[in-house]
Length: 71
Image (tube, rainbow, N blue to C red; front, side, top):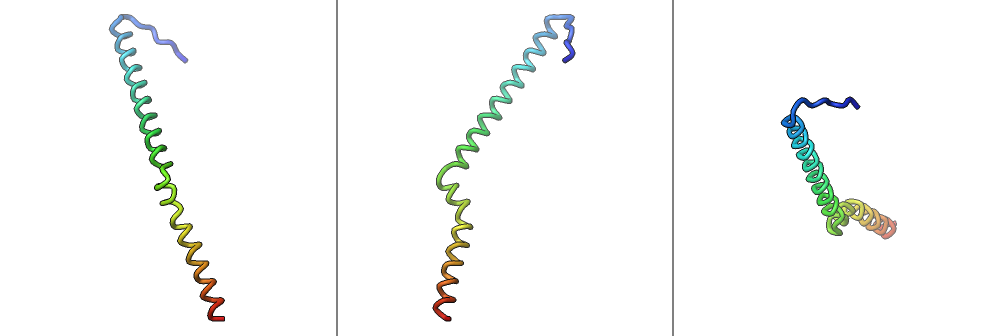
């Protein structure tokens, strides 16, 4: 990493402000990621994502029973 040489305290203060803002942005992104993960892990959402699979299984079971009944 190349070290920057500062010529004034204003430059140092400016870079410190930029670094502080970048850190705050990263923190907010992390908070959003945690919130989104929590939402995805709600039981309703988990069951919602499983519903197409459950529907396919139910249809295949019903279809097998109907085929057996007609044979």
